[in-house]
Image (tube, rainbow, N blue to C red; front, side):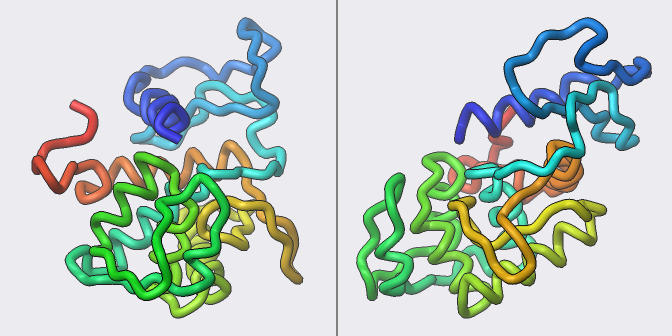
Length: 198
């Protein structure tokens, strides 16, 4: 998860140049099935390889889960672990039902270790259930223009509901990251009060 986050982050911060959009078959050879490079300021796409193809998004889901929690929850509150959260598969913190954790501490487990149980604890804390949280997450994504995204889980584990499979596109993930780097709370290490990336 750290590597994924750093790659996405670097794609947004490193380029603020006015290059024309480059298709993958022009100059670059990528192993990735889908990729996109977007100017974070203007939203202009600088590089695109199947950027609007829907695909499972795995733990990159946790990026929007994190941003949603930062925007809508008190980070100093305590969240209680449910049986559902405690039963999440690896990779996980190993939290036990009934335990309590500060929201901000769970965010560290979510983003730095990609813990699946942290995602569920936070989702249930914010919305009462993962199903309700998915509705809120999808509404948040749509508000950013991410219209080809459908989230079913807060952690990215594969699931399907009546509206479809848990999936997104590289383009939609870029729109979500565009919002992340505008959010100071998202960027700050709350223990040191310094940016995660400086």
